[in-house]
Length: 626
Image (tube, rainbow, N blue to C red):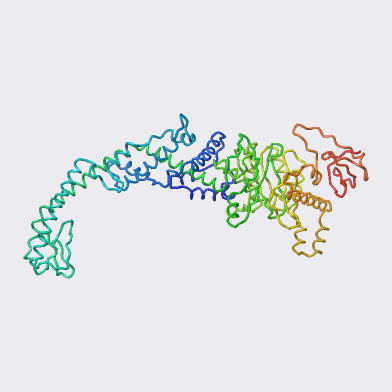
């Protein structure tokens, strides 16, 4: 299942579909592009992807692909099938003949063999049920030549008619020349007036005042009335015979076309098999050319929900940036079973939405049987459902605000998501009062995690970062930001949350220090300390990337956000620490990260602990008195 209905538009697949259409040679392939949809059968999907790989090999090996263009003659065939009294024109016959020629050339290429093995096995399988229509092609060739003329040899009757026509024309021409000279000698013809034809008959232009001196049939006169065009009396019988022969010739040609039309009707089934073959190969060729254009390959494919991609690109964005002389940073992302849902945070315009759209687009492309731009060592799996929530979903028609629309979408996700679902949510929890929005978002995320779906979620909410840090099945991710140069790096780093850099960005752009100082006083001190520590970790990550781009170990940041012991599904026993053992100044161990700190404050079941320069709020169940 795909959700929403405009998933393709939101993730950018509509552009991919248009690119495929532009790469097709004709309407048969374009129709296949229109029919393109995702597949959830693993064996079928692998077969489709390998078809494209094989077509790429064919395009590289064959010096010239036999299909350069073709005519879609289905409507012509359908017309004569529907109307038994109609017949094909010579132009129709030539178009069908060209289709047959292209089909045979394709068939011969895709069914090449080396020994007893097909060179292009996937392509040959497409042609398995098709037999070239050699007898129909031969029948057409016997009647019509390459210039679109009906051959003299098409039938004995036609050959006889045309032979007599030549003889009659020669007789007419000989008599006409003689009569012309006589009329000219008698002064009946203006010297500057050429000979002419009227109604298919040769006539002599006689000066009007002399028309009674020349015997024949008047067929026309000039606009001025000074010249009349007379068919000589001596040529009437020959011209009549020529007219009769031409009528007989037309009837014989129609008879031959009717016979060819009958042969086309009899070949209807095999013709439609040919149309299917041509359209499918045109379509696969377009997919192969698209792969060449975007650098698409077949990743390692497994029959389970997996996303483990290296050097992945959003193909449309990459092409646009390439045209502008810019480079798109690749995406490396992993959603393993123990960290199925990745919660990505970071500065605005840092690439969170692009990352989400990249995953949405590439997974959709792959399940449509397209090659995707990732490193060949990447592993890709299969999902039954692809759910996307991105952009403004407000609806005037349905009287839905942005947040109401978001909640409606979340309700759909909660109802239908399961372990074979990939959920993609941008700006999770946004659009309403932050405290309540964050709480609702956390509750929804908890339920989605329990339903064991996979996903990528972007957010600025601190409580979601903390929930991801302490919850089995979830993981934090950050879009890296180079604070020294004040620019996003558009690179995803997994294992730690990101910072919004809101105060720092405001300070860099020149916002008054008094305003920033006042804002800092309004923010919880614990939050500011954590933000500072997050920025320190990200700065270390950025520095490390410039020398050795390796993923930051999760234990570096395990104590940054509010932590709670990660409980396995099977764990049900909780051992709370008695409040009476705690007191301000007591040393404790935070069990989830093995860090030692000092108790600063006790707030019911929450304890404020100092870890060096960091203050953390942890749950009672997560500490142990030393």
